[in-house]
Length: 270
Image (cartoon, rainbow, N blue to C red; front, top):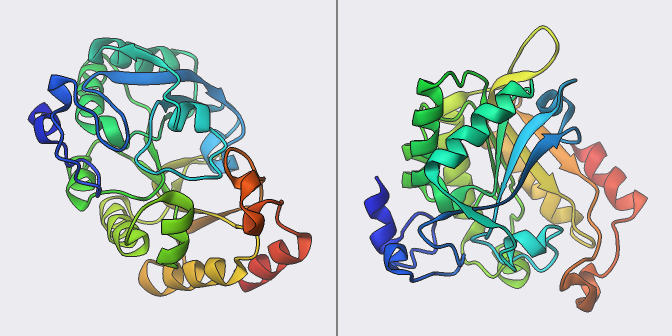
């Protein structure tokens, strides 16, 4: 499976670089897994964190270049430490021993083959809790198909309906078409949310959407697409926590938080 790293096409950028020979593409990831931290996270959506918290593993580097990224030190500057596949499997098991609700893979796209190998090792050694794939949504269909049977909960962003926004703020082409095809495959794999008796998600799809300043129409179009093309029973997490960080402070259109009025317009539409 790791031969894909010799001409990397894990994400839609299709850089074609040989990561095993030390080459890096747009995401700057090498052939080695790199993580920034792993922790118990209490502040995901309530049905993800539950009472016990989500066992997050934050992977370094990212295949998007969002100018407003709140984790830019990890995603853009590559802060983190390289570890082996064996060590990643151990981390999954250590998180389970800490009695978390799930293993939450944050920005995992660049390391899918290695993650699958680590999951195989961890499952042989007793990993049983759900696996959450927490992604920006800019995913290759083939990569999502590789994950079938390994991921229980897909937690993708659907950031943009308008591709000019994706180009301007995340430096990618055709975001909407690519992300929606990937999300439809995620839905085919896991379906609508299944919760346990405590209201904690065990399987299913939840789509996140961050409201951007001056872009209420973008949010409405995203929500309309979800209802018409996925399922009105799928979970949607509308995020209002945008604030201008990283390079966004220098871009007038997004150099502020969203207003209460903007949030209420999206909430009412939802």
